[in-house]
Image (cartoon, rainbow over all chains, first blue to last red; front, side, top):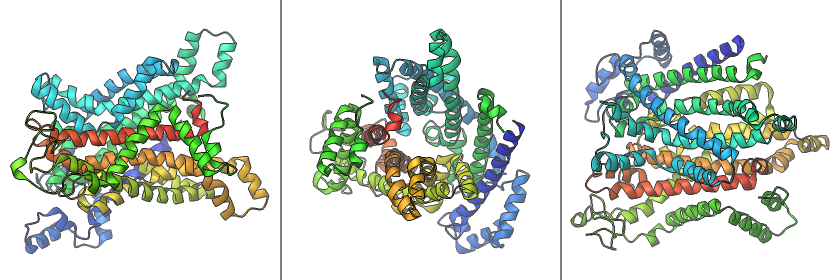
Length: 306
Length: 307
């Protein structure tokens, strides 16, 4: 168990290093990071001064080791737009993004798991067919488009919910719904197929044969095994929601990391984008670690393995 | 569907039957799954729109006509059938632009999947066939990449490289390769352990024969299924990038660009953003239905779980 966790931790640290390398290479891949970050009207002298100030004239290895040594102490340079350190700007956006993702995930789980269970236990029933089609449909609707439609109807025409901002509890309803919808679709599909698969396993037949009550079989044998793929997909989807809320946050002016990313790209503020990429990866990696822990709790094969 | 029926995959690979017989069998199988039929129709409609765009589209998608700007669709008052889906803020015909937009989406989806699939196939086959340390090294890198927040990096890379069709294709083609690699590797590993590859080896077959004669034909099914889903995802993400102003240049008629432009006129002229969104939705839905169906047809092992 401890070894399992330590190896996962080691992988995460390695990946974080990989993220830094990727970000470092990408910013330089077009040749000149200075002209990438300066506005198109900047004079050559300004660009040259900027290049010197940012240290882009140093040898690449020197630049990279500087990035790493600063990153270790949490220094990711200053945002070009705000001229303050970039990392604190990113971190203070985390609560809003977390709130949105949690609300969306909650909706997806509360609606998705029961629907999937009903479908899995009654394949071919009306609820199952409707649920399956809806699950597929919500995964095919572009969320940025759905967000626009919802604003048009529920905010502009009916006035039920605010169309932007994060001022009252009602503000979170529409963005969380849009963000959680495709996740819900996936949870329905996954729960359903997991239930179907496990119901066909030998040990379930054995349980039936030895005369266990169906209720016990479902709760003790089926649900426990359905939980394993579910935990994994919920972990992955939560990470996706944290890193992928850029459209939703932009459209609803939700003051989270996604909105900041969109703005930072518009400002060509690449130190800020870099800090966002690293920090989001950090959060997602931490989340993966938590998922792995949850795995170990649910699945004894991992707990006692090796 | 009955479990004891011969599967169309068996029938497709059965060389004793003529090609048209095999196609007919596939057709009958498609008809049994109504979702698959719908998916096929939607997909063919999009492909048709892309291929025959100059024939279908009544107007030049770039032609502006400011006098007729922001006209509503035909079935609303003030709308007329000269512009069935209305016009945008510059008076360009929305219907024609939707038709031409299919070209961008399908180009990105097709070439993106082609690149990702080829890269993934090679990497995954090497990992699966070599095994041991090579496999462990490749797979740990792939798993690490797959655990990153995908969309964030796509947006990040697109912002740096700038707006062009080629960049978008390359971004999706390269970032999506690990997905194909992982599936390929899993299948190759499974086949290596299966009896028929072992017996081919013991019969003295050399590696090109094993790879091209035994492993590749069995890889086609899972990879085609995956390609359908990934193509749908790429079309989706391309529109998303367009919406953020990071995909193809703003002058190109693409669904994402149209959505982004329509967003500004959402309250006064909602149809400008509505139609490109519908186009994305139907394309994506069609490909997902088709993918579900292909998975059933090409991978009999999964069929049990669907009933």
